[in-house]
Length: 119
Image: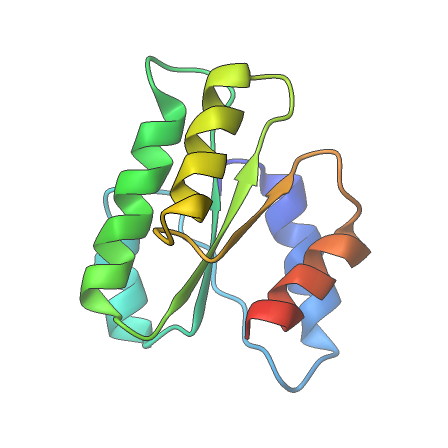
């Protein structure tokens, strides 16, 4: 995740929950290997708000994680301000390439409910 405040908030939120261990990986390139090494169950991947094709970058990362951790679930955080990113993420969900998505403006509580729902 590139939004450090969100990653830290998730970490704090989950520290009190014995059902989850939260790991943060700042590099899309390293995320699939990190996921495999840590045997993750759920990946939360952020679509950046800048770059040439940030949704594709996030979806490629999701694909890499799914290849290394076949039983893992992927939840995408998507900026509601980018029509291109929204369209790509919705299509990925329709094609079952990801398990779910949440827009940036959702509350932390809603995000946690989504994580619980796909776990």
